[in-house]
Length: 231
Image (cartoon, helix red, strand yellow):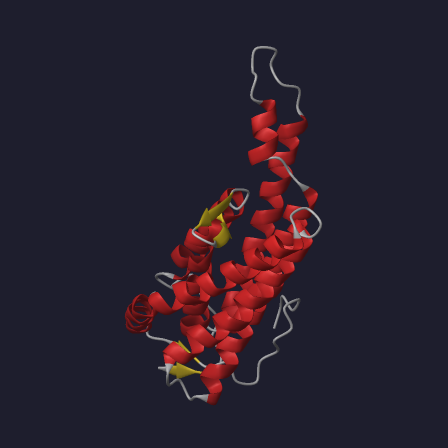
C-alpha cells in the first residue's frame, strides 16, 4: 500500500523495536569511538564496526515508514546521546573511593571530552538528517525503484558529512594533519563499503517490513524541516 504520508501508530508491529535498536547501536558506537585502531595503513575509530549499522537502520526507517517517522527516531537518538554524555560526566566528577585506583582509566574511556562529545552529537545530527532526506527524495524521484542506489547514495552523503564534521571537531589539532585526513578518509570509505556489503540484508529487511506492516511511505508534500515536531 503506497501512502504519501502516514502517522506511525501504536499498532505498528516493528517501528519501536527498530527505533530502540537504532538508538542502542548509536550509543554503543559513541562509547567505543574513543579507541583509534589501525589495520594496515588504514586508521579508524573503534566505532567503524558498529556505527554504519545505524545508517542501515536509518535507511530502513525512512524507506518503510517515511521521513517524518525517522525524524522522531533521530531526535530520540540525539536525546540519548546528550543524556549519555551528561551521565558519564556526572559519574566522572564524583569523588572516587580511596581504594579505587581506576579514575584515570574511567576518564580516558568514558570521560566527557567536550570536543569528542560535541563533535559526535553535531555530526550525528547533521549526518542522519542528511541521510534520511536524500533517501526520501531519491525514493520519490525513482518512484520506489533501485533501492540499492538510494541506500548507497544516501550513505555517501550522510556518512561523508558525518565523518568530516566529527573528524574536524574531535581531532583537529590533537592528531597530526596527515593522520586526521587518513582518519576521515579511511572511516568514510569503510562506512560506504560497509553499507554496500549490507545492501542484500537491507533489501531483505525492507521487503519483510513492508509486507508485515502493510505500508510503503512516499514522502510527498511534506516539510523536511528537522526541527518541526508537529505536522
